[in-house]
Picture 1 (cartoon, helix red, strand yellow):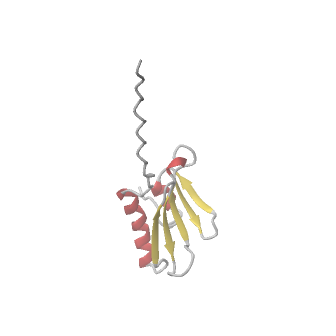
Picture 2 (cartoon, helix red, strand yellow):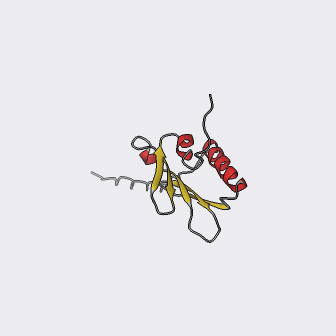
Picture 3 (tube, one colour):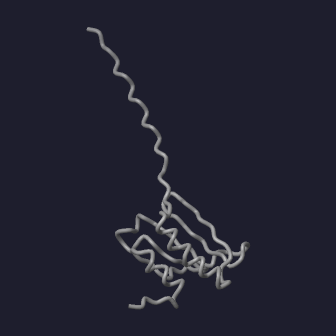
Length: 115
């Protein structure tokens, strides 16, 4: 009896880790608040980081300082506390929620819904 060797299993293609990013609607909301604050002279610069588990939009008053605020999107928290959060310079979470528009209201409190 001749024994045939089985073909070695083909190696699994290495998966590239998914990167979390803001979509177009989310960026439009963030940039509208950012634009108002720049026009008022409060904010001057921003940075965006797209990581494996979260996306971060950092807001700066000056280029060389630490960010004033971090607007974060963490999809793994979607079913718990909400995937959006605004954190201040000291690392304190100012607002967390499921809807970005509601979370961003902490940065622009003078805006109110008139109906």
